[in-house]
Image (cartoon, rainbow, N blue to C red; front, top):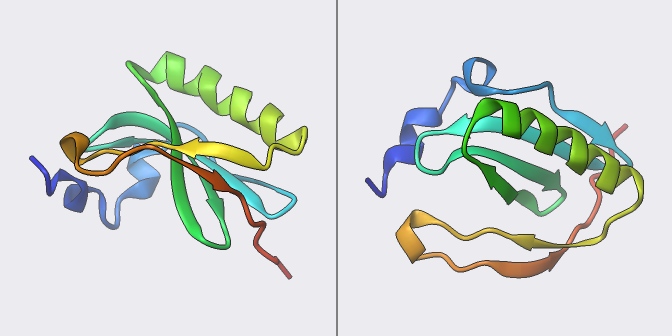
Length: 101
């Protein structure tokens, strides 16, 4: 249902496909989510932005590596995926790196 994402609170370690990688202030996270399945999200100073979803774990592992490469190349504009059964629409965003000390 629409609130399935609440099942994901506090258990990231058991859902992750790979460790979060930080490159130039942008994090790449790939994990299983209760509401959307496997997905890669980019983390920046504005929040968490889902950018790709997968049918299975093998595809998610490949996708995680692909997004690492995109971030290394300096990608700035991405499509943040919507969700919640169509209630939230996709939208173009510009990534704003986190300042990490």
